[in-house]
Amino acid sequence: MITDKDMAAKSRKLRGLMQQKLDVRGRDLRQSLRRAGRRLPRGVRKSGAALMRAEMLAHNPKTARQIDAEQVQQDYDKLYNHLHTIDVDEVRKSRLLSITGAIVANIILVAVLFIVWLWWRGYV
Image (cartoon, rainbow, N blue to C red):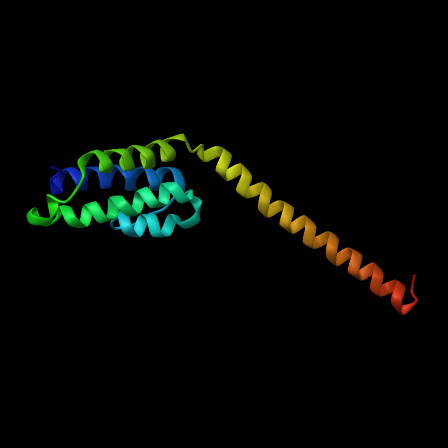
């Protein structure tokens, strides 16, 4: 049987990893996972939802008996392993390249539209 302290420790570790790797802060696991959103794959989000449910059930001793300890450990391992493998530098680099690419594409589009406008008005 998983106790409230065990779930709190697991939640604290996962929130720390999310803050470190995804720069996501939250007062509890639910808020951290909600803020992480689609930065986590679908399967990892489902594991996070199962952990949130287990954390809620662990608060009450009667409902804590409903928790499957093996499934909680599997979900925890899945979420932990995914967060542990994220390379922060690579995420920053890809985000910077994505923003730079969008800006360059917009500048090219504006330049082409300006040239088309000049041609249409008869200046070119």
